[in-house]
Image (cartoon, rainbow, N blue to C red; front, side, top):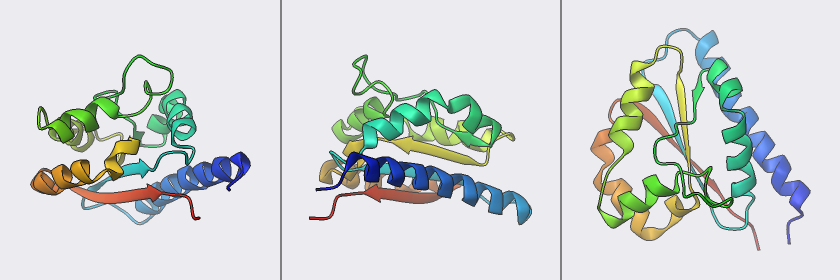
Length: 152
């Protein structure tokens, strides 16, 4: 079993990596495409904690050029309010694809170079299938996946 401190460290390292990639992009000159990270932390891997920290540091992240969009954020429950659960659930059910709006916000904002979306359900088979179906909408961004899981 993984200790909570290990999960917190992993979330911290993940955030530092995202910021590190952003700095490399800025130092290396103009970026051809902006990056969109889809974080799919499997259940019980500290994802809720990570989402909470990301959400409450959105202003600091925005100052560093990272967008954590409000569009598609979760339900009004403490466990779900900071994840992109609504975005993922609507996509999985076939009701709505909110990614084009998020990508438009990312690509049209010169102050940001990186977007981050986070929802545990992005690792579920039905959501993965829908992401594959809509893959053309990601043409204007460099898509990166972050999958967090526990080792047995």
